[in-house]
Image (tube, one colour):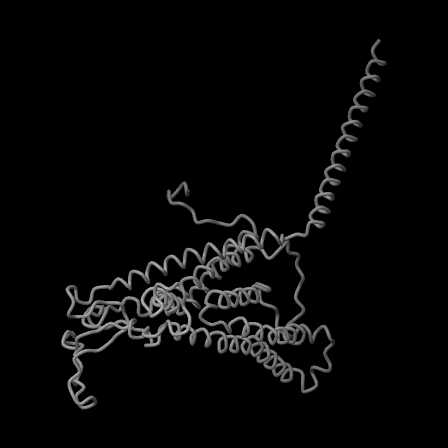
Length: 386
């Protein structure tokens, strides 16, 4: 609290390590939200709040909201992930190598102007190294950030785009060589610094791992047609009540996933320009759309059917079971494969015990010496007494 203004003072990190952790977390959150907002929108929000034919939800009562492709939002999400994993990574590699190349070319051009055509040959090696581009002020921060963001793209929506790990592997194989060339030929030699571990990046990786389990559960349950197909196969299809879902059990699924809409119930602003007679020979009275709603002639027209609630309950149940099962497996693997091997942990404990024992013995020796010195001083004092 500021004693003059009475307002709370902004948080100031006490150490350089705290400042680096705070800076890293803020930069990661900014980049993560900036790069993943489109994928989250396509996976969980696109086409979810558009309403239905005859009662569309409109922005400012004017513009109809965007809808998914008729085949589903999973195709749109897969295309978006493919563009990110191919084009974005290719562009990043091009910029990482192209930027220092252009800067060094401009530096060599400037030196030739100032010192002649053979300027590079006249310079000693250390001066030629000094004319290379300096490493950025944050060291390997950009490299860490790139790898963490790639890990997020690879794991968060892997259910929608299973090729993401393969594309990430190919990109990393190429980037290893590009980074090696960049560090050796285009940058100055970086100054080494000691680090205990990777710092807050470990916590960020843990958070991405947890988020990836949740998002993949929602992608499988909500974005894809996996759950509606299972519900139809076991509850409404030809194999309903038989406890199996083999060949032929999905007959009629497309028809069951489409609802009926009367064309005359369209809003005035959504009325079709023609009645379809020029294509079908007669006026089209009904059309179909993806949803689970009652037909227009029922007692409650366009209300949700029982199948909709069965699918919703199955989706929620799948999300809960999937998350708990994956987290249980993760915890079991973490228990069976510890971070430190048992023999290394035992050696570390023994080393710590020996250090404590040495410190204890050194303290005992110090106290014993002080005690002996006090006794000598006391004897000398008694000898001087008349």
